[in-house]
Image (cartoon, rainbow, N blue to C red):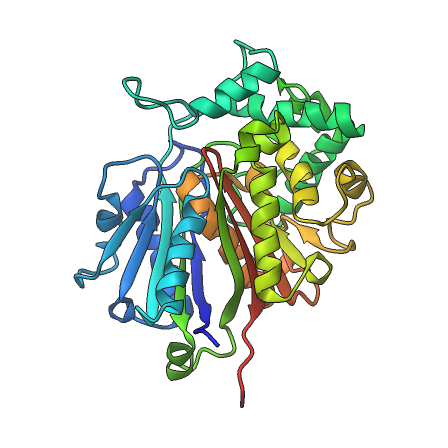
Length: 400
């Protein structure tokens, strides 16, 4: 039996609209990291390595970010994996612990973003998503009025509507649900509840996606302390240690491009493959999951991910959201935090914010958004270009 890895402390900042608060990434990182250390009840000197994720910044921002926690000389790894950056840092930390390299590792993610839609920063070299865009525009007409990301996910929704009969209302229901959930989340960038008609009537970004079905750019940070079983016992953290019982990363497959599908192009096949691995590792399946933090960068992605994770059969995502099975009172609660759509999406922080939320849920600390009797949690984080990280958590089980 291999070594186990546990999350023993989490922390995050409130997510903010870029430019709305006078702070910089070291401030964000220090706040999230300090909260995680305090949650675990350990000093920074107990941390042996740090995996630090961000997408926008100079090459050693990871070092500058942790210097606010302490100058202990530990290895610091700078991680960039697009929107899956935070969970990639967590994946690295878990591997260090499981592999016996370290007893305690910090996973930290942050982002200081610009206002507005994301754009390319380097015009003098091949864009890493050139094949994705070429494939999409071979299947769907290019729109000069919409940013690239909404087109990618909007086209996935259009394909689903044509193939399976999902309706614009189904995608709007996801926006409605996640905005409603965020009302109870003090860390959320937006905490306004909207009616379904408000969602449908919001400015159209790229049909069927209206503005209230698209995540905003955000500033913020998240952090998690990952530790071994020996470390947990030594520091008497058994009651709060959340075990990572399964975790997998999958990057683009041949089918991402060869299937000629916009649904596959935005990560459905990667998600399906990663989820399969996690279900095998954990011995748990979709039927066991109580709460999920899912990468809803656009409502279309949440709907197609229901199917890729096996929460429903292929083509039935619209029916699943319409049945209210993925909100409070349903089979499992998806995005109790409000998700990316309402909580916000500082790229490097998102995966660790998801981790924080699920740890609070399993420890019964989620206050007004607490999912009743939550025992098993699933995290899904996707970055285009591409990578998907799926993680299964359960409150640690220790012998007396």
